[in-house]
Length: 179
Image (cartoon, rainbow, N blue to C red):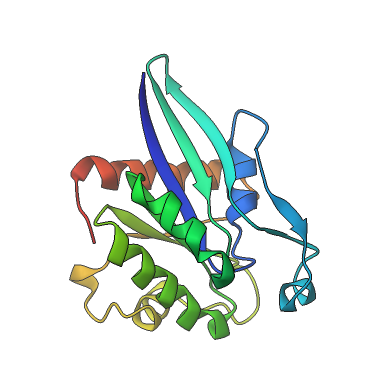
């Protein structure tokens, strides 16, 4: 069986766990624990190691989805998960510009460890104050649209939206484009 390993990464509260729960055909393995730091101001629980879900594409092909923790104190898990990944999606909450610098740091961390295809998934685009895709791209350091990864709008709560993001990521992977 061919297994493709996809990593879902991003800042705290960008929707990584929800993304995987929405699309996984198995019960998601998660390591959520009660948030005890500033994360508790945003949400009750947080991922401390990883999330794992699976999506079977065909009898001989499956996607394994690994969600990273959002906090930098768990970046050792980012390192472990990205090293064997085939591709990844960086989720960015479009309505929290204060998180863009941190998203850029995650992006840099991943690029230093793996030269694999990736896309940007913008979440929370329906929230007040959400930035447009081209402005988020600029905030992440992509000054030229010709040299940026695909950007997709994702509602992590909607299966169809998550499926479209995964399709975009797999298509990008099949094109063999590493950014």
